[in-house]
Structure formats: C-alpha cells, structure tokens
Image (cartoon, rainbow, N blue to C red; front, side, top):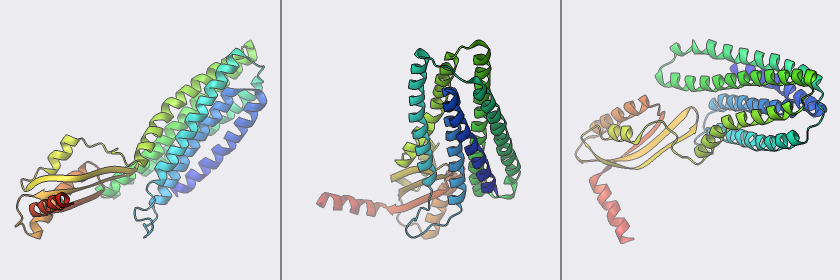
Length: 311
C-alpha cells in the first residue's frame, strides 16, 4: 500500500518536472530548470525508497544469496552522481548567463513556480502523513523488526524533507519571476541558479560519498572500535579475535563477521553457544542484524600459523 502511494507521488512530480524544463527553456529561465533538476533528484530519491521497499520484500535466491540489498545504494549512487554533475554544469551556465544576460519571460516562471509550489507541497503533505501514520504501527513489532521499520520510515522522512525544500526553492523561483516582471533585472535568474545549484550540491555530496563507500563494502556502521573490542572481549574465555568484517549493504542492514579464539579448548558446545549469544545480544543493541561468529581453538590457530610457515 505504501509503495503504491509513492508511485502516484512519483508520477505526479514527473509531470511537474517535464513542465518546468519545457517552460524553463521556453522562458530562458535557468532557475526554473535548476528547480526541475532538483525535483528530478528528489523523485529519484523516491524511486530509491520504492526500490528499497519492494526489493526488501523479495526472498534470497541461490544466485543472489544476499538478496538485492545493494540495489538501494546503487540507485542512490547513480542519483547523486547525476545531480552532482548536472549542478556543476548549471553553475557554469549560471555564471555564463550572469555575464551575458538574456531576456526572460517571467510569466512562465511565476505560473510554473506556483504550480510547483502546490505540487511539492501536496507531495510533502502526503509523505509526512504516510510517515506519521506508519510510525504508530511500530509498537506492534518486536525490537529487530521495529528497527528495520524505523529505517524504512527514515527513507520516507528524508523524501518528505526533500519535497519540502523543493517547495521553498519554487517559492524562490516565483519571487524571482515577480522581481524580473517589475524591475527587468534578468541576472537575478543567474544568481538564483547558482545558489540553488550550490545548495543541491551540498546535500547530494554526502549521499554520493556514503553510497560509494557502501558499494566498496567500507565500514559505514556507527559502532566504534573501542565499543566493539569491549563487547567481544567482555567474556573472559575469549583470548583474541580476528578476520573482522563490518559493512552496510543498505540503509536497513548492518553486517558483521569475525573469528574468536577461546582460551579453554575443553568448553562444551552449550558453553560456547552461551558466549556467542551474549555477544550477539550486545551487537544487536548497536543495530547489527546479520551477525556471523566463528569459534576457533588455540590449536587451530597454531596449525594455521604452521601451515603458513610451510608455504
């Protein structure tokens, strides 16, 4: 149901984007085009949210054993890269237009800007309504599922804030149109284009950076090395740990895997499971939802070292 609402918001905003680009070119207003491109980035963010919702519901397969977790970050990277390159071009054009101003048909700016305000305002309203109504549902889920739902809601909240910022930019376009209509100062359009582009770059760069690092399987989790060290070594039976891997394949999932070496080789299976389960409970408190712990004995480590020396 949530996905269907997002689809309608996407279609609604795509119509506005096409209209803004068409009338932006027709009126010679780069500010209107920049607003349309910003809106395009926000629609792409909605598409990412939709992908995350739909792919999150799909089961893993033998070919895709991790499922489709990275699809969200791949889409986010493409979206933010597109926005970054486009806004750099808009800054270049804005500077060029500032020194070589052309006449602008302000009527198109005012009309399309007003329509965009209404469209973005309604989109922001419905997204906020979806987020608020869905948040009341959290109490019906256990802790692990609740954390995943909150992450999903975070995506919707982010999309809501983007639509809200779109509304404010559209207000700027209308005010610029009014200013041009009465005072014929055309370079105000170039100034707004540059301001909008810098604003969008500021917000798209963190997404570009985070999605790129996520695709490289960099550690994007929030836990510190000190906290992780204290969790793993909290049990006196643990001698050391190695082969540590932390990665965040999507906004909803945090993965961790490592080997632990136990001091006592005579512990039974139940005692070993108790040690690892305590670790898992503490790691879940730090929002890890995929935890893999391999237990090695001291003799296994010695054998491994000897094999490496022989090689």
